[in-house]
Image 1 (cartoon, rainbow, N blue to C red):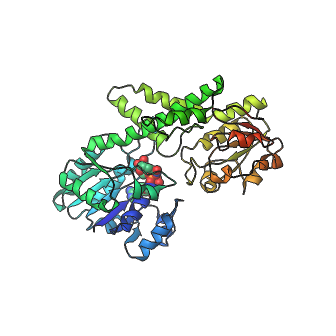
Image 2: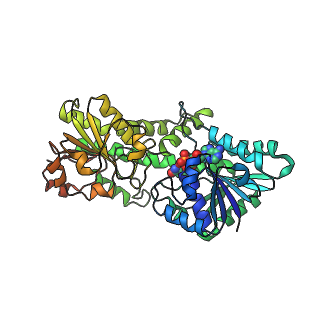
Image 3: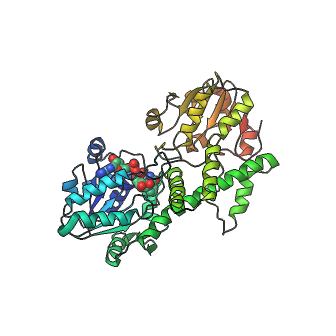
Length: 433
Ligand code: NAD
């Protein structure tokens, strides 16, 4: 079992650290955010992620998991250092590598022995080679550093499950011993391992996210056509998905993808391609379709009501998907701001993500679905939380001024809606009521 440091304890770093500890390694998680670290020391997860807090507490109690803000203490004498800091989007769409650069600098200052640095952050092709060069120049005689690219594929909302049951582990390395060491860390997971050179590993991450985003934009385009030609997207997607070459996943039509990965990674890949003079037309269209799709409910509501000025709009859901508190690049943010622009009064409810949303949105927040729906002229479903899917459909007519619902996630069957007193607009299906 190895001594491991994890630098950056966000969604990826914390989940990685906790799961590696659970596999038996000794893990120190390092973060610059003192508030986060003090919460984590007490066994509180700063993010909402099913199973995470229990697993954290267990591994803290069993003495395999600690937290610190002190890079020197965390990095000295480690066998392996994981890097999992953010790589957000810059104004021009490219990845902001300043957190990675700072973390690499922090690590370089304290290395005192041979060590493998495993990068989990999503970074443009070539970045890990630059990191390797930086270590070569700055660590000197104190130890040999080998950089390995090990991109992460977890999904927020099921991150712990995904860590233990992922489809594959990608290990990109130029040094076979370093690759073997990383493979060994994960051996108990018994997951398929794909070993590549560093640049291919970096590209696998971007290409995977871009491909999934393409599937989503594709089915959303088909859903818009379905609405116009009188077809039903649910049946179409089911029929398509039965073809194993296509598969059923990522064929759910809706108001587009969001979150901290797809939007920024698709934009970054367009930039990466542009840097080598390749215009990535397909991916640019995927992004364009998604931006349009995120505004679809507001457009439809405006067409239906004439104007949204002075209208009370209930927004159900803020998180970019269910089972997470993350609202980074969520459709909800675009939708809420557009509604405000149109002069609507917006009241939103989300089971988990309201605290994060309150930091960026100037709207009313309700304590329950019913409170959000009270006297509303229209309701927009933004996130497919189970709480909304399981809501008795008469709740809308009992509490809204007029029960008009625009469902951006196709939460209800048309049969169920037909039996309710409701005007129901969904994605790629006929209007009911
Ligand atoms: P995040 O923003 O949630 O967390 C980053 C953490 O790093 C923060 O807690 C921050 O305080 C800390 N940090 C920043 N600089 C630091 C430093 N110098 N030393 C120590 N800590 C530092 O980010 P995230 O969502 O976990 O994403 C991390 C990376 O993983 C990104 O490149 C992202 O694209 C990639 N990724 C994310 C997901 C996901 O679902 N969130 C999935 C796969 C890959």
